[in-house]
Structures are given as C-alpha cells and as structure tokens.
Length: 274
Length: 258
Image (cartoon, rainbow over all chains, first blue to last red; front, side, top):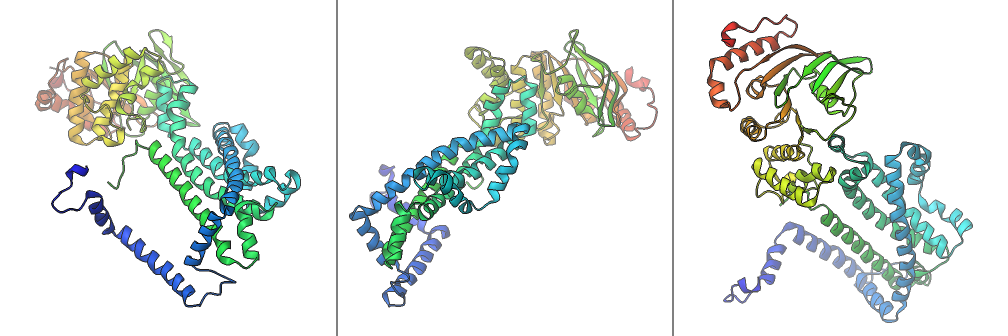
C-alpha cells in the first residue's frame, strides 16, 4: 500500500486518507461541534465565569486527571472498581443467557418466572440497593449483586425475545429435513439469538457501569465512585470530575468492544450502506 | 406415494376433504388451484409436517406420521439459513443425516454444479438473487437424494424470466436424475409445462376437481410446447375452469387429446 503512494507529491496515502475523511460531514461537523462546545466551556472557565467550587472546566479537569493518575490514586480506585464490574458481568452474562433461553424455549419455565423478570425489568434497580445491602452486606458480595441486577435484565429479555422470534419458516425447514433438537439449536436457534444477545450485551455493559457507581455510592464507599465523591465533598470539583471522565472512556470502550463482536458475528449480513 | 381420503380441519374450518392421490415413481404431478385452496397444507401433510384428521398418507406402503428423509421439500420463500454460506446450506440435509464428510463434499459440489451455482459456494444467501437462492434450495433438496421432491410454489416469488429459466432447468435436471415430484403452483402455464399429470383443486374445502395427463412426453422442449396447439387448447380449457370454480367441469375437448 505504501508503495502505491505517488512519491513525487511527497504525501503519504495515510495523510491523504486523513484529508479525504475529514471532508465528510460526519467527521467535520462532529469536530466543529466538539471545538465549539468544549472551547466555549473552557472559555467560560478561563474568563472566570465558572466558580471552581461548584463546577469545573476541561483544562482543569485534564490536569486533575493526570495528577490523579500520576499519584496512583486513580489506578488504585479503578482496580477496585473493575473487580466488582468484572465479577458482576461474569455472573450476569452466562446467567442471563441461560435464563433467557429457558424462558424462550420452555413455556412452563416462562410462566413460572416471567412475572418476576418483567417486574424487575420495570423496577429502578437503585431502589433494590438497600434491601440487597441488608441481606448480602455492603462489601464485595453486595456490590457485585447490584451490578448483576443492573446488567442481567437486558440480557435475559433480549435472549428471550431472540429465542421467541426464531423464523418459523426456518423452523419448518429443520423439521422437514428431520433435524434433531440439538441440531436445531446449533443450526437455527443459537445463530438467530446472536444479534439479540449482542444488543443485550451492549445495554448490559452500560448498565453494569451505572450499577458499579451506584454500589460504590450507596454501599461501602470504594473505587472510582468513592474517589469522585470524596473530592466533590471537599469541593475540589476538578478532581471530582476526573473519575467521571475515566468512566466515560470505559463506557465508550465497552460499547466499541461489543460493536466489534457484533460485526464479527454478523459477517453474513450484507451491509446496506456500502 | 399414496393419499387416501385425506381430510384436514383447522379448528372448525375444513380445509381439505377426501383427497385421493397416487403418485407413481418418477412421475411429476402438478397441483393447480387458486390461493387458499389448501395446496400448501396438502403438501405439508404429505411431508409429515402436520397430520391429517381423516384419511391416510402412505409412502411405499408405510404410513407417513412425520418427516422422513426419502422426501425433500423446496420452499416458496427458499428457506435458506442466512448465516450459512451457500455450500453449507446445500450440505444442510446431508449433515443432518450424519453422512461422512468426504461424501458430503462430493455430493455438495456435484449438486452445486448441477444447479449452475459453481463459483458461488462462499456467498451468503443475501448476496444472491432470488433465482440463485432457489437454485440453492433445489440443490439442498436434491443433495439429500430423496425419492420424492415436494415443491411448494418454488418459483412463485421469482420474476417471470427467472421463473421460465428455472422451469427449464428443473426439467433438465429431472432428465439427468429422474425423481417423483409433487409440484404446487397457481400458474396454469407452469402446471402444464412441468406436469406429467395436472390435478386441479377447488377452494374451501380443498377437493380434487379433476385431473388429466398432459401427454407432452419426456425430454420436452418448453418453447415448442408453448407454441403448440395442444398447449393452447389445454391452457384455455384450464383458464375457463379456473374462472368458473362452481361450474361442473366440461370434459376435456377431444381435439386436444387427438
């Protein structure tokens, strides 16, 4: 590829691609928007229109962000937080898939549990924090349980809908060719559930992050939630908002990972846009 | 393959009544009828996908009480798995039957070539035209090496040109590997062109109205048949019969039978 670059112009293809891309509205409109919003916010801060006791502005938050990283406080807090996040997701994902499949496939099981599942799905999970703390304690187990409750709901509901929405005409195809039940799962049901599952995982990751912070705020104070809350209580808003920036980055990264999985598992879908 | 007095109800609605059909080895039977006359239901009963309340379907003397590998269906909406490549779709029935890998590979490449899909093995269904998807549907059914092919309006969702091409292809393939076929259609032309025998059904409840041998013989040239007097006369006769579903069918004109 690099050898294809016209040597005479002295512009590499990478550079060219960059300028080509920036001409697209999707790229330059977003860039301009970011400059205007962040720049305006920064300007407000620089001109003294933001009281550093009640709010902060981008450059101050960035400095605080690097300070917290350099002092090791941020990494320590992130490590603490990630433990309940990862543990919560590791429980929620397989459990959610199994429950969703059982509900979608077996009527008796569905009727036995659907009241609770849909009631919990509609309940703001924050309201469950105190009863969970009472029963399971305010430490690792209690906090992980909160994350599980936040994350598991979209997985169960999506997988359930995926199993339910299996193409009936394809179900008939499997029957017509004398497929056994286990072959049917392999050829038809699992592949049709995947897009629903991936969408559910995307939601679950976002909700797991919310659950993590909620647990750290409401139960025993720890991790990024604690770091943020402590500084805000001390009226150091720049340091208080830095962990929030990290949470934002983690959230975006998790969404990206899910998107990549989605593309990988749906290579058979012909892209409409290209 | 034999059907005796088959009757079927959906709830209190009777959809089929007293259907007697005998399909001989390697015979192509086309079933013609207006929409909603229970043609597809009939085919699903033959396949064992649903059971009939009255009468009996038997195959080589055995009662059909569920799908069996000696019959393979080609579906109106193709019925391909969108997440499987073309070769995987064609291999589907063979894999279900638990054949050896080498045998599957051999049969898949044979039938892929036979239906004219060589070179498209790695494509997903959504990347192919409707005509090509149905070729794959046909290859999948043929690869299972059934004794009877069940065709549920297989070309109904295709455009006219593709449809005619596939009709010719189907007859060509059937010359190479003759099989009994029950072919459901609501196209008069298709029923006449493909069938050794045409069976006409009445709607609600579906009954057999009349049937006759087309007498075009094997190795037929569809272009030639289309231009011939016999085809024109039969076509006109069927058209009149379909337009007046209540009327007692007149006897087939002698001219036509020569």
